[in-house]
Length: 172
Image (cartoon, rainbow, N blue to C red):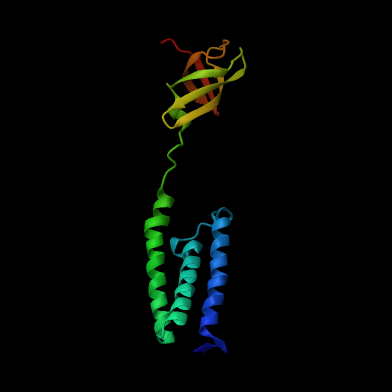
């Protein structure tokens, strides 16, 4: 069968190449488009994936089977709908609702014990290393009582303001 004088296999192949390329480019540059707050039904990842799978399965069915062109298109629609639904339900939705496991809030640091990396001078700033099970983080620190704290001293985090932790020496 032909569409606009072009064999249907060629139309499927061109569609596969075009939408496969667009899907790949969209995945690479997804952050640019993430600011567009579109409803889930207009998710470009789903649309491009649907069309890519449709054209791929249509090309394979048209070239490898002796089925009617309309039946090939119908089966391709079903295959594409099924795969994109599975992609959405089992990949995209869980990823979009997942939380970052290594994140922390500044308020979570209060009461924790750290070690001074860079000495904290009077009325100045230093650096404190806070270790946890998930890793270590170094934060800018200042003395809570405006006193100098030397390097390698254990400190207790009293409060956090504007990304700076205020500490005082910790007694075991």
